[in-house]
Image (cartoon, rainbow, N blue to C red):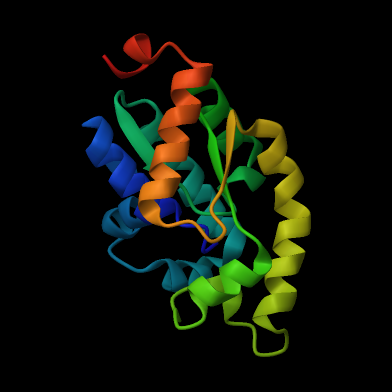
Length: 170
């Protein structure tokens, strides 16, 4: 959350001349309601089930850059779709950076708990999710204190070093 998945994904797709999808936006378009509403009515489990179906559909497409919700990797099925159908890039951000980037965003359902601070919630999520991200990621990119162009450059450089770029992007 707040690592820049949607922003970086959109720019990366443009640079690579690929289609960009944000699984949260696709889910909102399919259901006609926002993510917060789904969380309120169906809970996190209901949301994750819907999210898994969207990720399954989107990972079957070719020549796409996909931004998923931060918790999508909690679903074993979603993880498998991502791992087996593409290159997983983990945009890593510290809790402090996440707090800065999300402080004025009131659309994040997991940060609406009046009984717990956003910092506590983000630390808890990081403890739960970071080991999974580190395990499944093909590439890990530090987004702390870097601008969009630097992050894109680092992703492209890493892709070129790790993969046959002609096969990957043609």
